[in-house]
Image 1 (cartoon, rainbow, N blue to C red):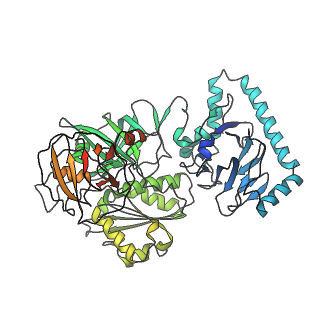
Image 2: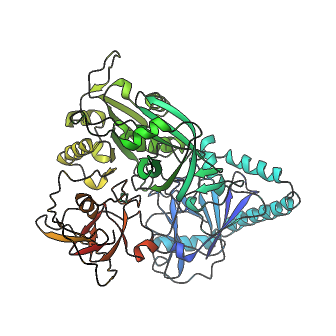
Image 3: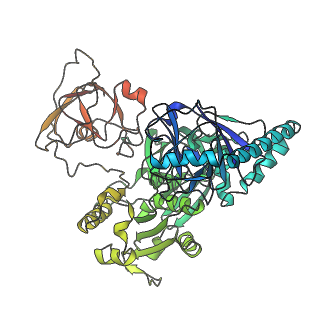
Length: 583
Ligand code: FES
């Protein structure tokens, strides 16, 4: 167990005591930075998104600077990325205006890191500069002690405690950011104990709980008409709640529409840096122009027609890995079309709210100027933030409104104009399937390193491209039920065929190796709920009785207990042999 006293040097009379379990420090360790994704969040303009990390190796505790330019100090000595610092009790780590005093560690032993030249230098110089850190430590400790004594005389006055917490939040980059960082900001006595200091396991704030995962009932607070066919629905919890998620993630709505429960995934368009509300932005979906008799977008249109201020709905999540929070790449290129703008807006709002040191090029394609979602806000963001660059293109001639921006679809020439340095950027793409395929083909063809390419894949049905050969037969019930492990596997030849047996439906279907089990069920007219179709929401969860599958993607929508019970996600599960499913 690593114990830390966390001070903000601007408010040294207040501090927080943290405890980080050894389990948390193993492997990748506990990251420290201004990003809400870090294990220990230090909200400050002076702290980089991922500034450093604490970890344990061979029983020894270490601090490593992750900034590549040595922005952290231990005992007043600069720490480098290459040489982690072996920690002992009373070591003082300085990150921005924050001071972390290490406590509760056993005596330091030999380690592979401490043999390095740099590490010896650190150790040597610590002996010669012993007085300075100890002096700092004593000063911090005496201030903390003084605070404990003084606060013990005022602890019966909750208003005093609340005021102190409010005053601490003034140290944050912006008023809105202060809302989310308050839980880790230093506070007065009684000193809170935090087992795992993480944004996702934040303690209650003034009695308000954080929603970090799971089902929640929310109430519509307002409906904002973004364009003629796009609305933003702003929700609050039916009980007071603060929303915590990563910008770019999605939620799954659970709706009762004409007597049926229907789940549908929507990207969150709001930002976790404004945690009191959660927003989704939804486009009304007409029937396809080439198939006017096809049904219009059931759920999106239902939301437009039925959700108003005061309406209550259920949702679950957050889910998804489409977020720029998980990397600290300094240059981002967001490319979106239509309502694919929503996760980009969430990430942009977050980056600008938190002062994240990112240079963002925001490219968006709309049909006409009237169809640009969030247009005014995007223009304000561009005017106020020199690191935010907006480029808009219209794909149809504008009617009635002049347009001096780009026109037409994204091409290699247009890409070179809006982002001449696109090869150096991390690219995020979201929009209709055809748009995303086009962008991917374009940048791939221009030699872009695809390891830096991300797209939001709300996978539509692949029926058009898959060629399942269905032959349905009546079955006798399986004589034995056995759960077999999931095989990660690799994509197989599309010529290979496998058999999927739907036990309850008494149907047996032969399919090729590139057809998911969800698609197979749909081919066989067996009803399976689905939403994101990309493994993130868990809606298509079904139980596998026998056989092996491989996943294309990560089954994030399943928790470990569900996996142990044999559940799989049909949308990303592909049979690798004969498989029996319990539907
Ligand atoms: S539909 Fe969301 S996990 Fe399968």
